[in-house]
Image (cartoon, rainbow, N blue to C red; front, top):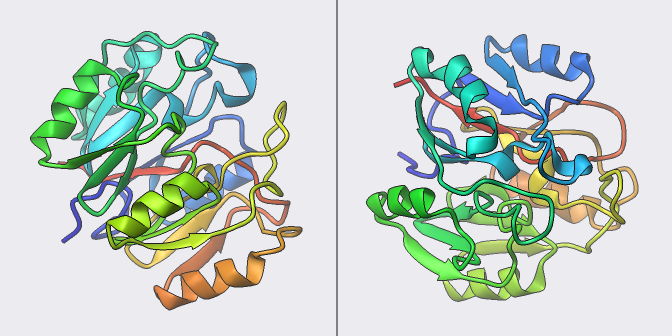
Length: 248
């Protein structure tokens, strides 16, 4: 049984996804009998990432979220009566880096990766209770940079993250940066394009139409027996991670 909230043991009960995506994407997920919670914009951070779930919240485990005070009330109203524990973080997010990274912690195996100088204190408290090993890195957008494929398998374009995870015995596919759409930026992060909906099924926001490593990506997913759900036929887009939860 996986303790990593980005790896499911069963089918998700609820999914939190970028509220600005086309409505047909939400409907595709709902057809799996999964409740969809579209995000609202966090007005205090940069517009292109204002809807991104992994900017404003972090799943401590499969049924517990730590949420930025900026948008806490929305998620508390939406989920607290549905068997999801909602904890209000301490760090108010704002526009300039690193004031927008407090909840963007990467997780793989029993590791938590972040630039812990800037991690929300409340989130740190609850992550410590999960008995995780803390790995400090310079990359503040840690979760954005990591596509969590399986219990010990990650895709990233971040070379320092790649090198660090290799040290801990994680199977890492290093891909070329770029080729992922994120409006307002040269490109987005691969970790923000996807999320696991079941133990076997991983959903991607779109297709790797132009990515030079698309075959490597497909083979890596095949290696871990992943069924791919393409949420659109458009080019892959960074939507800030698809976050799946289970009711308590």
